[in-house]
Image (tube, rainbow, N blue to C red; front, side):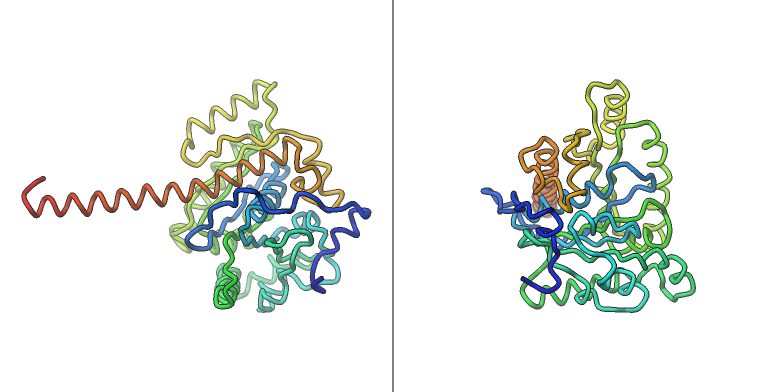
Length: 317
């Protein structure tokens, strides 16, 4: 076992980690690395839970997946049983120019999953970034270098999932600048919708000044309780306003999802047959398949437009 591999098996009380074997039907690989920022400035909406479980599900589909824990709380690192007090992490990468390859850790039990952990020092990063030149680009530079190194080794990363803090500070801005796709977990409660407008305003500013490629592509409904009218009203509202972005597979409010982190696991390994694990697996599959379908649609549209221009030149259209 790699010396930098997590101690998941030890911290789970000797319980064997199951459910990490590859799926019978592997998920389709993207043409290029897809970089997601998972953000919501409102805490307690299932942001980190969604990030780690979707990443775990993608890796179980045979896709090389990297989780970047950019939240000083370090909950994503905890979910993978990574000790936060004796390793270098994202603080050193962003503020000390430490190569990301020196902090990335293989997650025990997952052959295709890795994590760049958040250490306790990351809480100081916001202050240290303030006087730095190009402070919003620190993560992007480090990540691009790492991805190029891995690609040159023939180990291209398929998915990067960046877990942000529940705020709109410099760490979140760094994540938005480094990514191409934004994933927003929305708890099925009223206040979650109120915070969505502020987040999207911040994203529009980032698009205008720092990263024109970042787009909202994925919305995940979390903590859904179909028995309540409010949850259904929130889901209907999101469907009406974001029909293309919404993955209409609500993540239920489930005990197993909440229990898993206390055992240093994701729900994908803690109880792979639970409704929570099955829901996150379905969401991950939709993310992988949806991009492939969109690429095919765009390609068909491009070919159709090319043919139509040819017909017009010939006087047929």
